[in-house]
Length: 205
Image 1 (cartoon, rainbow, N blue to C red):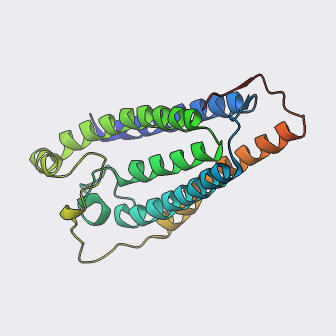
Image 2: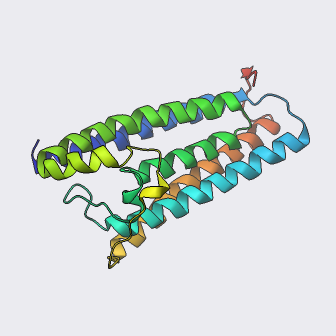
């Protein structure tokens, strides 16, 4: 795989997530969450909001380390010392948060599974590229650092953190995506409550 091919699987991942996200929100717009006790609803909302903000902060933190070096060189410091894919890890946390805002465990599980499958395709493509580019260095890195779930005991800090304005802009853009998804779910809830959006079925859990 050559350098010109790198954007392909990233663009594929983005387009796949856009299509799947559109389909998911389309289904949510005509689907009601199961009736739950008021306290349970509050817990879902709070935990979902917390997960979304953890995802935004975690992705911004990870972007400070990768700073435009993604797929150009092997980054192994900071969050990349405990997991090979911290951006995807925090994105899954945010996806769980968005799913929790729907008020349904089934919806949250569907969001998580869909996101994981899309991220898995992207991770496989990126790993193939890095293995072809970095060879033994990547193989050694892959043997010691988990692919997705962090191992905090492996933490290793870098000497100097590269700061670039592009990373800050990208982190803000990523945050807007999660917040927009959150807002979309709230709009769907309001539309259903007002009778504007038809409810075709109610989820069991």
